[in-house]
Amino acid sequence: MTSAETSAVSFDTPVAERKGFTLRRLLAPFAIAIALLSAFLTFMVLTGLTPIEPTPDVVRSFYLLNAATVLLLVGIIVREIWQMIQARRRGRAAARLHVQIVGLFSVVAVLPAVMVSVVANVTIERGFDRLFSGPTKEVIHNSLTIASAYMQEHAQLIRGDILGMASDVARARPLYDQDRQSFREMLTSDATSRNLPGAMIIDKNTNILVSADTGIKLAYAPPAPDFLTNVNDTEPEIAVLPDENYVAAVIRLRYFDDTFLYVARQLDPNVVALLKQTQAGAAEYAQLEARRLGIQVAFALMFAVIALTVLMASVLIGFNFANWLVAPIRRLMSAASDVSAGNFNVQVPVNKSEGDLAQLGETFNKMTQDLRTQRNELVDASELIDSRRRFIEAVLSSASAGIIGVDASGGVGILNRSAEKLIGHAESETLGHPLSDVLPELDEMMKTAREGTQRLVQGQVTILRDGIERNLSVRVSAEQTSQSRDSYIIVLDDITELVSAQRTSAWGDVARRIAHEIKNPLTPIQLSAERIRRKFGKTITEQKDKSIFDQCTDTIVRQVDDIRRMVDEFSRFARMPKPVIEGEDVADTVRQAVFLMK
Image 1 (cartoon, rainbow, N blue to C red):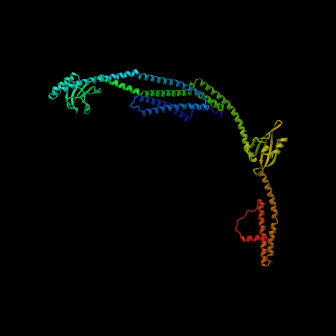
Image 2: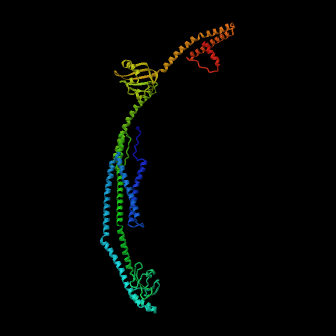
Image 3: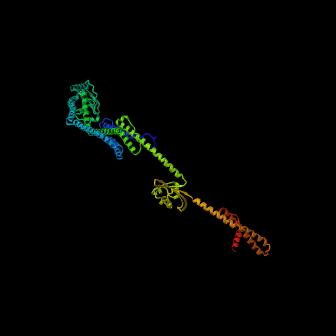
């Protein structure tokens, strides 16, 4: 970073991490709400306050739901604890303080929650024990006994009345047959004297034969015909009907054929209502006692979930408080770690609400600014030196000549690219190594440079690298301070092509001279051959000899011409003439070659 880079380093959480933290933060309240709702529903169902009947399957389902919510809460707590442990293992800043604060809040939350749960469960247990104790049960039993005694009393009264009336009616059988009106009056008088609002004579089909006229209307119905088949004439059948507010009795009449006496007496509605309330209360008490264990479990589960919920809330509060307290300390520790790593552009955010920690952050920022200023000054000076060094290296690397720097001990200190190509070694393979190992061909010149008084020693050497021979022009200059020579600069120029060109030029001169010497006698030879052919060709009469003579002279002329062309090519280019591709008579060519060999 340069001196212009003064932007503060950001310690903000990445977007993905912030989203993950938001989801985790929303998960805990959601889990708490679900746990409370499941506990409340379980309590309502187990106590019978909902239309849902607490069957074993329903209770088991709610237990599983509560277990799942509790496991979810425990999982969240375990995950948070694991993250703290991992942060501490990784050595994250202020991780130990974070753990201590959260642990303190957890302990403070657990103890009251456990105590409240224990006290609540004990209180509920004691309350149920008192509710279902012996005296309470005895009161309920006595109430039921009194209600039953009231009903039995009315049943006994109506039994005596119906037996007396049945005896009177049996004696009045002749009156029943002779005068029905007198019989009705007798029946009415007998019912009135016995305080029976309803009395009637019915047959086996429940048809009313005679009914007493007491002047009191009672809404009652005669028994069913099937019920009458079991009625005898010695013991009446009595029915107490509290829902209809009356008690009834029926008995078979002697001296009558399948005829029955049916009487009814009204009960006090207020007393019947109280009796119903007593029975309902006793039934509810028995049902409550039967569900005692379920209710206790519901309360215990509810208190357990509430305790876990309080614990979770306390842990979250502990996390928030720890984050608020640890955040500035963590920022300072992280920034100090960056400064120790050499990053002086660190600036920690300062919040005035953090109090003394904010002042500490301001002091830290001022310190980093001072360090950054001093570092930038050193960097500027170093960059100036480095720019000069790079300039020198650029000059050396762009030079066509190979340059090697050798220190006083004979080790290679500088080597440009041209020198790498010339000596066949990379810079990494030569730096720090003795020159005698890298380029032993220069040992004699280096010895002369060390022992001589001249600052410049020149010469030529031949080196062999990778099967290629190179001719190098070498200049060794000494850098001398005081009385000693500290270093040497060796300049290498590749003169291999120059030497080759010089050799080629010299051979070209020799070739031209040789060609000239060869070419001089060719013309006389050709002219002489042509003159012989003209002069003596006419004197030869033999056809065979003439053919041989012409062939010999033509061969001399042709060969002289070929030699002349070869000499011309050799003289101009110091090479053999280029072949000319053209059609020829193979037989003639063979005959010429054979003739030359004769």
